[in-house]
Structures are given as structure tokens and as C-alpha cells.
Length: 188
Image 1 (tube, rainbow, N blue to C red):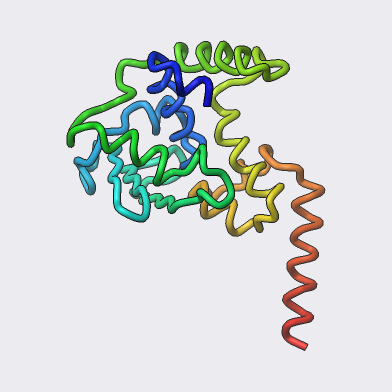
Image 2 (tube, rainbow, N blue to C red):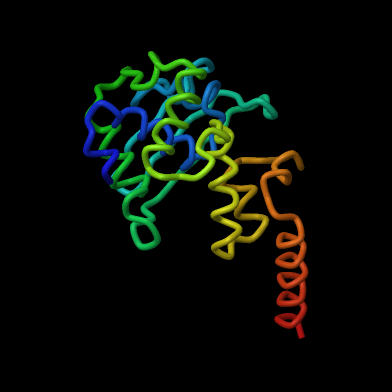
């Protein structure tokens, strides 16, 4: 909240929130986002603000040759300060179709500024964070809040096992065993 009060960092904070929310690779998937245009365009990463959700069109991803549409609904009940609809949606709604809010930010600037802002916010070891921390952080948050493997995979639109280095594997295995047990109990 204090960081958002500083108008000069608002675009940066929204960029980080967008990467976190959609579990994006910041350099290749977040920085080129275009507001409200290009859905279905083979070269345009486009975000659409809907009344009840945000939709992000990615024409390709590192480990996918086909396009992806990621949707995020309101999550005010669990975290109103990071709600995709009421925070990111409001931010993107101020732009005209075709605008690219993050296009002037380089990956290196994003990494260095993230560290500075985390340091100002009092995060210990802020100098060890990078833009991958946003994807990892969301995956870990889903896991810590009881999310199942399927939810983590769907949220990140992940198909390969590479995501697993983001998570606490022993917790994930325990959760999977519990999920299998619950499924057996339901059958009986």
C-alpha cells in the first residue's frame, strides 16, 4: 500500500503484480503485454479487462507452441490488495486499446528495481530476489493455501515438470497422498 502511494512506482508494482498473478516469465510474457487489442493475433500478448475477470492472451509460451488464454477472477476475499479484477483491472482500464504499459522497462531494470522496492518494504535478503521469484511465489502461495497440484499446474498453464523446483516437494508429495486417500474414501 505505501509503495502504491508513490505514483512513480505504480507501473512497476503493477508489472510485478501482473507477473505474479498470471505466473508469467516477466521478460518474455509480461513486458510485451498490450491492453485490449490483439486477442488471437499471433504476435501480440494482450490483456482484456472484463467485469468479472482479466483475460490474458499469450500467442506462445516457452514450453508451448500453441496459444494460451489465462483467466483470473476476483480474489478480494483472500487478498484484496492484489486482486486481479479490482487492482490490476483498474490499472489496465486506464489505458486505451493498443497501449503497452510495460514496454519501456527492460528485464534488467525490472530485476534491479524489484530488489530496491523489496528492500524499501523491509524484505530480508531483497538482493537475492529476481523476476522468477514472482512465478515461484505464486506457486508456493497456492501450495501453502491448500491448493492441489492440478490447481498449480492450471494456474501456471504448466505442462512440464520444470515447475517442481519452485515447490516444497515433500509437502507436495504429502498433499498428493492425502488427495489420493480422500478419493478412495469417497469411493468407498
